[in-house]
Length: 209
Length: 167
Image 1 (cartoon, chains in turn brown, yellow):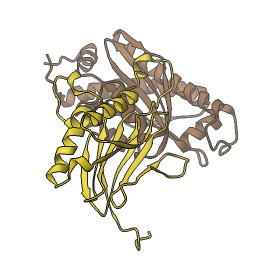
Image 2 (image 1 turned 180 degrees about the vertical axis):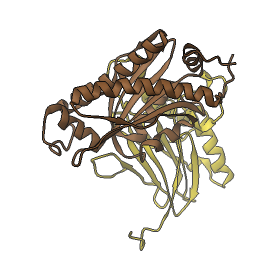
Image 3 (image 1 turned 135 degrees about the horizontal axis):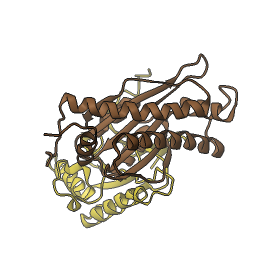
Image 4 (image 1 turned 120 degrees about the horizontal axis):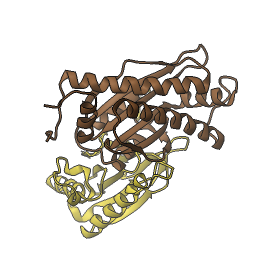
C-alpha cells in the first residue's frame, strides 16, 4: 500500500507529466481541428499541492471563469477539468460560431453550449489518449459546467469530488492560441486519488516500489 | 486608492479556516460556492468571527486534520475562541452566506448538493448552541464573496455582475 501523503520520485512525476503531455497533445489537436486554428501548449506541470493553491495557478478567487469538468471512475477515479478565463471564453465562442473577434462579450445560452462543446472535446480526447496509452478501464461521467467566480467553481468541484485532503496531485497544462486580437488561454487539471496514481504509473511500466 | 475614510484593516479568511477580529476590521472570504460562510458577531464588544465551511459533517471522515473545514466542528471551535476573547456567547448573532450549487449537468455524483447540506448543518449546529441566525443569503447557483464589518455587524455580499448586497 502506498502511504497517505504520497511524495513521488522525480521519475514518477516525469511519468505523470508524460501522461499529461500525451493526453493534452491529443486534446489540443482535437480543439485545433474544431477551431481550425493552431493551438499551443505549455510544458505540463506535475506536482502535489494543497488544493487551494490550484486556484492561484489560474488567477484570483473572484475572477470570472468557465469550467467544464468530467468525473472519472473505474481504474482511475478522479477528475479532469478545463478552465478558461472570461476573455478566453468569449473568444472561444467567437471562433466556434464564426463571429468576428470581440463580438461576444457575455455568455448567452448559445455561447454556453459552444463552450461546453469545447470542454467536451478536450476532456473526451484527453481521456481517450490516456486509455489507448494505458489500456486502463477509465469511465467518464457526463460533463458538468459552471461559469462564475474561480474560487467558488474550483472549491465546489473539489468538495464534490471528495478531493479535499491536504495535498492533491495536480497535472496542469496551459493551452494558448496567440493571435493579435484574439488570444485564448486555458488551464487543464487532472486531479487523481492516490490509488489511481499507482495504477497510472504501473500501466506506464514504472513500478511504485 | 482612497485611503481617507476607508483604511479599515481587512483580514482574509481562507478556505476551511476562520478568523476573529475586534472592531474596526473587515473579515472577508472570497468565492464561496458550495462552501458556507458563517459569521458570528457580538454587537456589544463588536468582536466578529468568520468561518469558511467546506463540508457539513466530520463524523463521515476518519482523520480530521482541519476542524474548521466542517460545520459541526468549525462553528463550536469559532465560538470557543471568541469566548476566550471575552465574548459573551449569549449575545452572538449569526449570518450565513453561500451553499450554492455551482455546476449544471447530469452527473448525479456532482450534484449531491453539498451546498444545501452545508447550510442545513450550519443551521442545526447554531440552533443547538442557541445562536440566532439574523440573515441568510444561501442556495442558488452563484459564487459569493462575504465580508463581515465589525463596526456594524453588517455582512456584505458580492456576486459577479451585481451590486454589493448588505444583510
